[in-house]
Structures are given as C-alpha cells and as structure tokens.
Amino acid sequence: MAALAAEETKGMSIAAKGSLNPQCVLAEPSLPSPAPEILDYLARHPDAQDTIDGILHWWVLDACVRKWAPKIAETVAKLVEKGFLEEKPSPDGQTFYHVSSRYLSTLQQQSTQPSTPAEIE
Image (tube, rainbow, N blue to C red; front, side, top):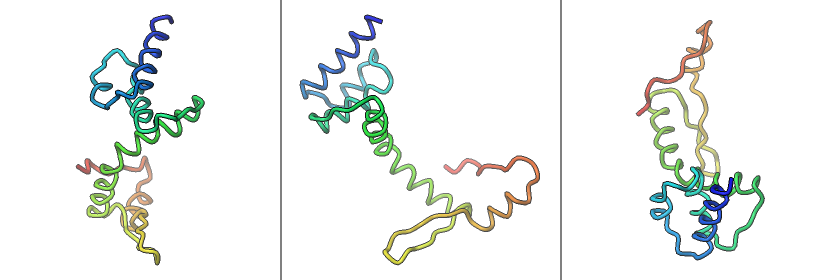
C-alpha cells in the first residue's frame, strides 16, 4: 500500500511541476495504467481538480475520445462502404449514421446469434 502511495505521489509531483509531456509519462513503466491519461490531462489543464468520478468521466474519458476519434471516423467510413451503415445528412450539414436496411434484414433473418461485421480494417 505504501508503494502505491509513493507512486501516486510521484505522479502528482510530476504533474504539479508542469514539466510533463506524454512521452515521459508513457516511458515511466512503474506508473499505474491510467496514469498517462490523467497526467496528460493535468499537463493540458494544470489548474484542474476533481473527484474520482470526475477524473473518470472528464480526464480519462477525454483522453479516450482524443485517442479514438480518428479511428472511429475511419471505421464508420468503412462500415458505410461495406454496407453495414447508411449516412443521412441533416439540414444543418451534419451527417448521421444508422444501421443499413440490408444489414438489418440480414440480422433479422438469422434465428440464432446475430453476426458482427467481419474484420473492417
């Protein structure tokens, strides 16, 4: 327990000094797994403070969104290309996505477990 507290203190002191960059955090193997996301958020928002629930929802989720956004866009484009999703433009210029009628009918025809799309990449 004391070792974990020392590691948490070490992580907090790294962030508090403002000398953090994501590469130095990722290169520190002794930090717990969500530490890079937490410390990266603090490097971008040095005055931040929050509860455990807030850290989970804002700091760590923020890192996940930043990490996954390009891959999600690429994957959605491939799902549209392969016919699993359809695009629907809205009047304000945004595009909405929904299951394609072709894929939905395939799912409904299967009496057992629905299949998931094959490797999209």
